[in-house]
Every structure is written in C-alpha cells, then in structure tokens.
Amino acid sequence: MRPDALSDLSLEQYEFLRDSTARINIAHGPVRSGKNFIENLRMLLYLKSEPHGDPTSDIAFCGTSKDAIFRIFLRDLFALAGPANYTYNRQNGSGTIFGRAFYSFGFRKADDYERLRGATLGGALLTEATLCHPDFFNEILARLSLDGSKIFLDTNPAGPYHWLYTDYIMNEDLIGSGLLKPFGFNFDSNLSLTSEYKDSLKAYYGPGSLWYRRMILGQWCMADGVIYQMFNPDIHTIDNDPVKTEAQYIGIDYGTNNPCVFLDVRRKGQDWFVLNEYYHNGREDGQKTDTEYGQDIQAFIAEHGKPDKIIYDPSASSFRAEMRKRKIHGLKAADNTVLDGIATVSSLLQAGRLHIHSRCVNTLREFGSYAWDKNAANRGEDKPAKQHDHAMDALRYVLHTMKASKIPTKNNWMS
Image 1 (tube, rainbow, N blue to C red):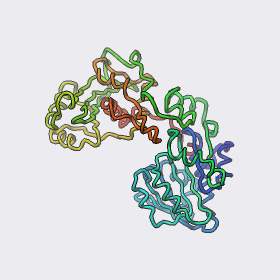
Image 2 (cartoon, one colour):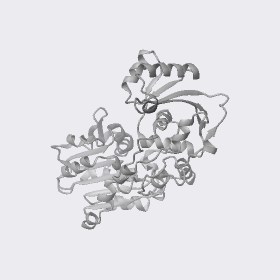
Image 3 (tube, rainbow, N blue to C red):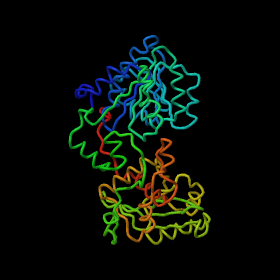
Image 4 (cartoon, rainbow, N blue to C red):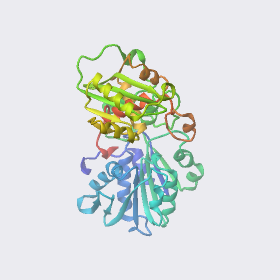
C-alpha cells in the first residue's frame, strides 16, 4: 500500500505518535491492531531529529532475526522513507536512513547481548518484544546513553508473569516517574480492518482458547491446563479413510528412551488426516538403535505409501543420517517454532479441518493429556510439559512446516 492511500489514524495510534516521549515506550495489544504501522511513523520522525542532542547517532533495530526485522518493520519503514533516502545490506541487516546508520540485532538467545557491547546508541526499536531475552533488554537500555535516547517496543500479550509485563508494563514506579509509557491497542485501533476480516481472525484463533484471549482480546493471561482444549473426539475422530488425498507426509519425533513416533498425515483440500501411526516407547518396550528405527521407517513407508515429504525432528541428526544412508528421499527438517506450531494445530482443530483415525490410539490419547508446563508459566514462559508430547510434536512438525493453516493476512502497513 502507498503512503498516500493510508486511512486516518485511530485515537490509540495518534496518542502513541504524540505521546511516546518517554525513555521506554511500549505498544502492546492483539494482532493487527495497528502497532507496527504507528511505530514506523514514530521512528521516521525520530530518525529525522532525535535524540535532539545527537540526531546523527546510531540506531538499533532488534527482533528474533534479521529477516524478521526486515519483514515486520524495515520493509515498511523503507517504503515510507522512499527509495532515495535509505540504503540496506540484506546480508548483515545494516544500512542508513536519511544518512543515519542503523544496525539489526537478534535478541532471543542468552548471549545475543554480547553484540551490543561497546555500542553507544541514540535510539532503538524492538519488535515482538516478549521474545527478547531479558539480558539483551538490560544491555540495550545501558547502551542508550545519549541524552534523550528512547526505545520503542511492540508486542502481543504473553503470560501475566512475563518479565516485560511485570517489570515494565505494570511498573507503577517507572510509569509514575515518566521513564516509561505503556500504550494499549485493540482491534478498533486499526481503522483499516473490516468486520469480515476481524471475524476471520476470531474464527482462526477460536473463542475461549489461549490464543483468542491474547491475540484477539489482548489479555496477558496464563497458559495453563490442556493445550488443545478445542479437541473433541466426537468431532475430530474418523473411522474411515478418505477416498482420495492430494498429498502425503510423514512426521517423525525421534526418541531413544522417550517414545519414537511416525505419523502418516494426508491432505485433501484444506482438510488434514492422520491415518496411521508408529509409536515405540523405548523406556517401556526396550530401546532401539538407529539401524532398527531405520528398518521400521522403511517398513512404515512400504505399508502406507511413499510420502511427498518426511518431516523430522530437527535435533535428530543421527536418525537423519541413518535415513540418508538408506536413500530415503524427501527429508525435510521441521520448523520447530513451538508456539506458532501449536497455534497452527489449534486453528485446524477449531475449524474442524483436522481428522484423526481411530486406529491412531496414541495420538488420540495425547490430545487429552498434552498440557502447559505450570512451573514454566509461573516463570513467565509458555512451554508444553515434556510428557505426553511425542505424537503431538510429530503432528505439529508436519502441519506447521507445511503451513497447513495461516493467519488471515493483510499488508504490514496496518499491522
């Protein structure tokens, strides 16, 4: 979308643009609520003149990766600035805007903060800030040492014990001192969203689910209980094979002591079917070697058909080598972004487009026992408990890696 085609600003966007004058400015709220767009406008103004004592100082743009920073933020910032006013090195994420240098930093790992050492920054932006490691955040605050330096953050909600929520968004002392300003957004903060698009987002996340409460209602709420609460065996279990499917995949969650799972997953249109499973529990039934599992996956393929792709646990390097030695083709490492993968599976269950054959007894059993880790939630982290999760992991690998379900999208201008 062109800048001259943008709709009017909402009250929340206008207030952020006008009032984000604190040292720390946080825009938080549900998906597609207009946070990124108004941050782009605010950063465009910042790059032209702030901090007022040193408007040529370096800027840091931070996110989960250089590609994520470009996709979520920089691409639209460049469009607003115009092609004559920026340079960009896609390889290292650095460049200039209006002649001012900027650098991109990943912030997710514990040691990512080390790349900031020695830097003196005039400003920073963190996108998807709940994914930032707290050590990185502490370091970048220390690097904003010029008078008037500011940091801008955007985020969707996470759990109520997340450090960003407890230490900053709800920190009355920082807010009262004027050092921090939190800005809450909602669906009405984005004037470009139609009622039909809002309804499609609500259907994607599913009323009552964790994702709905966070991504639609904007609540900082706990991940607790069974993960796939929308799973209903009466709705999602089938007793007959589909007549004809269009694609076939095998998902593998590798284990030695823990269970090793192969799932035969088929696609027909927008519907997905788990038709067959292999489930070996090394702790209960005796451990197997990679050679034995290699024989088993070959037998599984011989019985159920040659798949288009075999999507395996990315940490299972020894078993991947065994499959390659056996000349098993179509191997693909899984996209193991856990929370996004869980959201993909949840959306298919919510839409009634995921079907599990009754003979896949272990997969069906795990749907009822796959739960959030309570101890992790109390630390502000969203993690599944590491039990009853092996068929769930194999299924998530296939569905999320093959992009079985996508969030309804609009352009990034109003995200």
